Length: 581
Image (tube, rainbow, N blue to C red; front, side):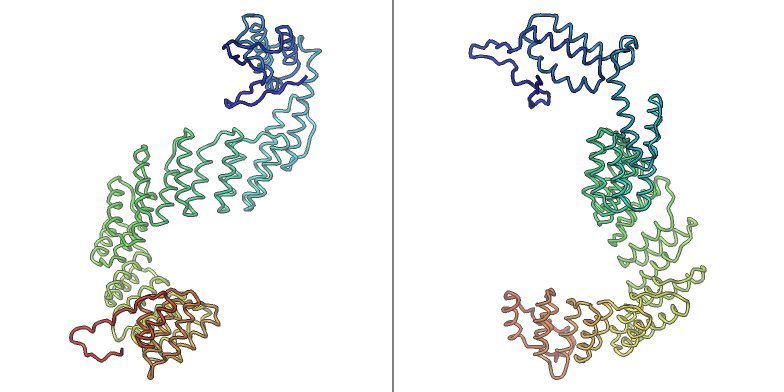
């Protein structure tokens, strides 16, 4: 008769017939007598001798069935028999039980061993290993070969970029009886990480934990790297904490992933916090880790933050590369601090670090930010003297300097630099052409802007919304609303949606025309609302100049929830009054 133990909250099976206390507080005896219990234990002893540890574990619930009986009985024979059972188990587990005592009783164990060999053979076949009949004495070697072949098959699938196949191979190997180790799981985790799927990679790590396969530092680091590349900083922190909770010592790669994830999102404070935790853990940051923080501050234009981390990097004796100096110079460029940028450039030369094209482009950007076209040209000439050929970024920086110089000749200078770059064999992109168009727009040179626009199209480059907006602007300010509408139609035919900047240019064209095109401006505004384009004060002011403030207020009440019409800007002192209402 089979006895099934009932589950308990402690995780150990307890029989429903365990001792209970009656109302008087006295224990109630089990319905099994001592003789019946003794007989069951004797049978269990012979079962252990005839089988192996797996049968012992399945039968252990029978031992649990009598745990309470042992507690309340005063007989010692049951306890002694239980001890004998465990001694027999140990003798059999470690091979100390003589073969003579098992000669006639070991057939069941031999049959189970043969079944295990067949299972391993099937697992090898699942990974492309042919089934070969081998003697039982070679089973261990055969299982090792099958595991190696399986790992090689998983690695091949990973190299092919087929993470799902790699996972299926491992599942097939396990279902066929193969015993996977950390190498198999790490290969599958690596495959999913390379495919940019950290969620699936983490599922395999959890399965690894559930299967009792020891994790390695590489298991966690591959997952951390995958999450870092998807900018999931929260997941990086969670996995890194699991790594630490798992009793492992995180290395520089582990911490660098969390730092990188926060830095890519522009969260320099969190990135710095993890760097400090890394140092507190006794791990010295390397140059790459400091560069991540410096680049993060540079992207935000925080020259002070970039300089602070560069100073600490140098204090640790780490080598500062040209990329690091360029990042600091770029931060100075974004903040418009030309003197600081030139100071860092000079310090770079004093330390025998040679600048590259990105360094000179950053210096030109600094001049462009300040609107100093002459100084930008000087840095370009200096770059040529260093034997460094210009690229699209350099030419774009020069054009940008021309656009911001506010010179009456800025449009002509921008086109000249475009010609120079094409003659030098630079493959300019749409950004460079758009910058030239923008320079023409700021100079009010609509015809030159249109010529550059058609030139860009002739190069096979598809204009984006910024190029169309820059092209429409000079025509809008001269009140040529017909031309602006034709640009809008061409943009729509190119499957490019309007944005608030282009709508503003359209409304300006209606307000600047003679006479004003109030009806067209209202229709333009209504269509913009229907397209979900956000409304800002510039758009409302341009609409008010086109349709008049009373009608604009009515449209705000009808379409924008009663948004207020911005007040008319006061003319600067000394300027003539006479602008349009």
